[in-house]
Each structure stands twice: as structure tokens, then as C-alpha cells.
Length: 638
Image (cartoon, rainbow, N blue to C red; front, top):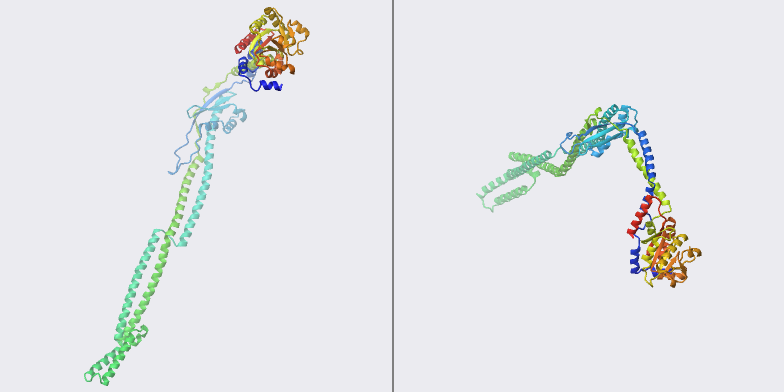
């Protein structure tokens, strides 16, 4: 088998592929909807009966379930969130969330207002019951919403309930806004308290900073220090000028006291005596020379005293004027010491003030940073405080999201119909019953043994060629098949194989009898058939009754028969087969039998040339028409 398969399976010739495409049947699924439709129509009374039964059940159930209701709708209009509640010009004011249309529509059916309305009305309905009797909708492209209540009691109950329900909806949306505002209010209160605490801490830091740096202000304190430095500079200039004046006074007094000292007087007296002596004597006179030495001594003493400090000025005293000058020098020295001490003090003060002035930019910057931070916190606290006022307004009295646009009116109550639900359920039951009956008829049709020609061709995968009535070997279809298909084969044509695996021995006997009779009437000779599988299906009597000659060599006949795969030594003969027909009966068992051998058929034989069917005539007008339509479709597809 593997050797033969290796020669035929891996690479099919172009001719084989062309034959396979031209002989094949295009429908791969062996299910004929026309046959099933015929089976359904044959049992049409089942569909009518099923529809009537289920329709009656549906109408009865609908009448039991149907209870008259009184429907009433009222209109609510969307209220815009107020835009005028703003306590500051900075930032966006607080406003409750502006819900979109879908969210607002869902709030209309919230359970809280429904439960409160149910408790207030006390009409016997529970919170679970009421949810199935209310609905809400929005008028397209408008801000108008409708709430509807289907009262199972009366129109008055509908008017009363929907009035209370609309009030509860308004209060519910108000509570939604108040709840949101309270949450924001609590958050803002906490933030404001934290900001106030931070501001108090910052105030304490500013006070501590001012104490530490002796800082009481900005520009004014700098101006004060600059003024103080300027005054110190003036005082310092005055003290330095005073010091200079005192030094000049001391120098003048020193000079004067030196001219009024006793040595000066004795020097002048000695010079006067020298002048008197020179008027009498020459310079060589001992008296003159002695006087000159005295004068020289006095001059040297005076010159030595000129460089002594003030402590030695006592040597210049002794005269009234010398004493006075000495006292003046001592007083002036005291004033000079005061002036010098003042200069030192002023310079120390100026240094201190200058150092403090140099530190002031950093101090001012730090102080300004603290003040700026405080101002920022104050601004933030002020803004939050104003937002807090806005939230308190909404927390205490919110307008809500709706207002009543149209009050409920007893004249608009609409009672429900008592026939609509039974009619709808009756129609639904009618279609359901018909559908169930259809499914049952389809299953029963599919479970019967009859099959159509189309399903047989789909099973063999080959086009339709001819069909023959079951058990009628005299049928003209055999003669037509022989003349059109078999008699046209020229002499020397490769053998034609009939694959009969799907037929029972009885059906196969009728086929060979009809084909042999047509051959004998055409040629005047009995049909010779080479049986590749003599051990299968036909026994001796059946072969005898078929009126054909069953030969034992392939050379004696060009018509071969195989009921299954031949023995191994005869499989090589299958290579010479060019045309092969599949014989099948329009019954489920025959189709099943062919499927068991189809794989071997396709492996060892060329593409099936055509499908030959034997059929049992249909019973019933719908089945006959269905078979005719199925046959027409099969021929068109072939």
C-alpha cells in the first residue's frame, strides 16, 4: 500500500488535478436543507398545533400576570448651580459638583428618596416593590427630566406618590450638595486652623528675631543709625579740631613760659651788665670774659630746658607771669586729655554703629523674608477663609439640582391596557411553540433513513451522473445511462470501475441487472464484468440473477467492480483505472457505509468520475417536491 501510495499521492499530475476540480461536488457538508424543509412541511400540522398550544398558554399566563396600572409622569427641570456666591475676587469660588445628564438621571432613581416616599405614602408597597414601578427619562436636548410611577392601585395613589417622590428627590439632591459642602468645609476649617497656627509661630519668630538683632524696623532704623553715625562724625571732627587747638595753645604757652623764666631774666640782666662792661672794657677783660661765660651758661641752660616735657616746666615758674602760664598749660593739658578721650570714644562708637549698619542688609533680608512669608500665609488664610464662608452657605442651605417644572395632575393619569400583555405573550408563545415543533420535526426528519441525492453527492464528493429507482431494473434510467455514458467509450478505453461499497447485495444485484439488460439490448451481447472483490457482497445466485457474465481476467472486460479494496496482488490493477463511479443509495446506512471506505477510495483510485444513486420514491406531496427541488439543485451544482 505504501509503495502504491508513494507513486500517486505526493505529486498529482495536472490532468488529475483538472479532473478532480471538474468532477468534484462543491458542497462538503452532507446535510440537505431542502430535504429537512420538506420533512418540516410534511408535518405542518405539528407547527400549527405547537403554536396554538403555546400561544394559548402564553395568553393565559399573560391574563393571569396582567394587572391594570395607573401611570403618571411629572417633569423636573435641571437647576443650574449658582454662579453668584463668591466672597473674593481672587480664584474660583466654591460650587457643588455640576453633574452631567447621565448622573442626574441616575439620581432620580436613587433608593433613598424612593424609600422615604414609600414610608410617607404607606400604600402597602415595599422598597423592593417600588423599584419595579418607577422609571426616569430625559427629554432629548433639554434640561427637562420625567419621573414616572405606575400605580397598581388608582390614579389618586399615582398623583399622591409622585408628588411626594418629587419632593423627596429635591431634598435628596439638596442633601447631596450639603454633604459635599460639609466635607469641603471640614477640610477648609482644618486648613485655616493650621494656617493660623503657622502664622502665630511666625509672629513669635519675628519677635524673637527683632529682640536678638535689636531690630525694630527697616528703613527708619537704618536712617536713624546713619543719622547717629553722621552725628558721631561731626562730634569726632569737633573733638579733633579741639585737640588741634589745644595742642597749638600748649605750644604757645610753652613758648611764652620759656621767655618769662628766671634764666631768661638773669640772661637779660647778664647781657645788660655785659653791655655796660664793654662800654668800659674790652672783651679780653676778665670781667667781660666772665660775663660772656655766664651768658653762655644761661643760653645753654635755656636751650636744654626748651626740649623738656611739661613736668619740667616748674623750672620756669617763679614769676607771676610764669606761674600763670604754667597753670594755663596744666589746664590746657587736661582739656587735651578730655578731647583725646572723646575722640577715642567717638571712634569706638562709630565702629560699633558701622558694624551694625553693615549687618543690617542681612538682618533686613531675613526680616523681610519672615514678613513676606507671613503675608503669604495671611493671604492664603484669607482666601481659604472666604472659601470657607462660601462652603458654609451651601452647607446650610443648598438649592439642589432640580426644581419642579410641572406639578402632577390627575387628568394625565394613563390606565394600562388589559389586553396588551396577554396578546404579546400569546404571540410569543405562538412563535415559541411553532419553533419547538419545528426543531422536533427537524430532528425527526434527520433521524429517518431517507437521504437526498444532494447528500449522497456531498458524501462521495463527486458530481451527480444518474439515479435509478430502487428494485426496478427495467427503469429507462439504465438504458439512458448506458447510451450516454458507457456506449460512448471507444474500443481500448481504460477500464471503468464501479465502487459498490455503499450498496447492499440486493440493491447491487438490481443495478447490475439493469445495466446488463441495457448493454445486451444495445450490443446484443451479455455484459462482462470483472469482479476485483468476488468474496464481497454478491454470491453465486445473485450474480446469476444479474444476467451479467462475471469474468476472472481484466483483459476480458473493460467494466470492473470493487466492493472494497482488492487483495494486495491485485492493487496494481487499479493504476489502469481512469474513470470510476461511486454507487450509493439515498439512505443513511448507505452513506455511512461509503464513509468507511472513502479514504481507501481516494488513496488508490483516481478522482471519482461521478455519483450513481439508487433511491426510494418519496411519499407525500411535500417530500416529492422537496426531492425534485433537491435534484434540481444537485444537477445545477454538478
